Length: 171
Image (cartoon, rainbow, N blue to C red; front, side, top):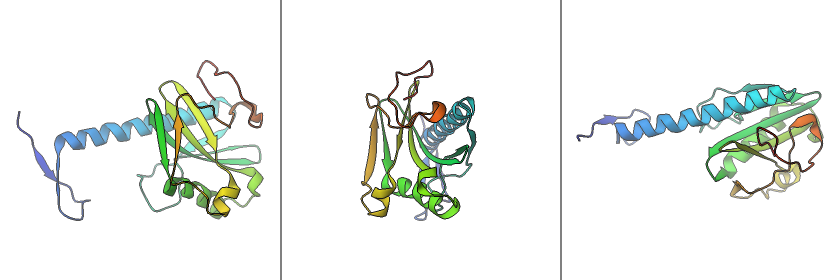
């Protein structure tokens, strides 16, 4: 089996990338696109207005993966697709807060930065606290594991009630 190498213009050092690696990168990006699109559909099913932000991350712009609104509340979601655990780096968590702080002219109680882990057929949501961001106490990374219970409920905003997963396994 022969390997083909390509120059990748995005790489500042002029390094080469194997076509096998490029295919893995494409699959990884498609997986993220799938989860973001699935979240938009799930949000719309639960009476949210939602859109996927079509930005090629990682970027320095403070843009979330998905933006949603229900009534007077605005939500910024960072989405990860994994099989058992998902890691959210500090920089991506900061982007959620920065987006809501800079572009949504509402009070903090109406702006919600949310981490969304798509773990197989199960969704786990974790809303981040504004106080930790203000005090500079955001962890280097947040981890959501498949056995975790989220602190955010999609259906009819029952403010952080713990629920049994529904048919789509939402917690």
